Image 1 (spheres, rainbow, N blue to C red):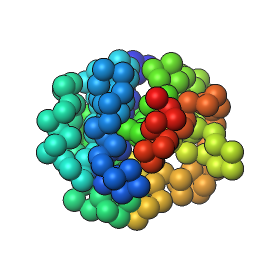
Image 2: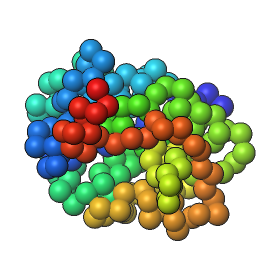
Image 3: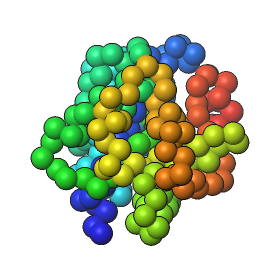
Image 4: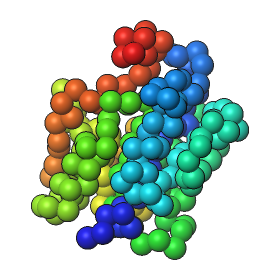
Length: 196
């Protein structure tokens, strides 16, 4: 399988960062921003198939992005992650590209690196699991790769469930990977300062 053409990467970056108090997508990280870093990692794997869902502060964030990506605007971003997943997958389904899977990631997990994203994609190619998810202490979550058979249902998600309800519903189809501490979220200014 040529993953560069068969897998799309969907970066969720639509939130208004209410706990941060400023757009966390634009926080400085490694000579770019949190979102810029997530995009660079994604483009290293799937150069032409990176989609970014924006919502709050769309124009300001767009101006900060140096790489060429497919932007998707979620007008219902205040409904939460599920809404952004649905909007992103819905837009991808409207393209003429026949993706085998979509890898969903967040812009606020800066320790997620190219190696880990590649590990997810490689695992998907190996054992036929329909969902490759990241293991957390009491749950599985993003980054998660979903096979195309889940696309229609993902495109109907709403509210703040994100992909987690799909992972729970299809638990028997899920393989989880240990991110080895890389899946830390930045939600507050203190989180950001601590990581820096």
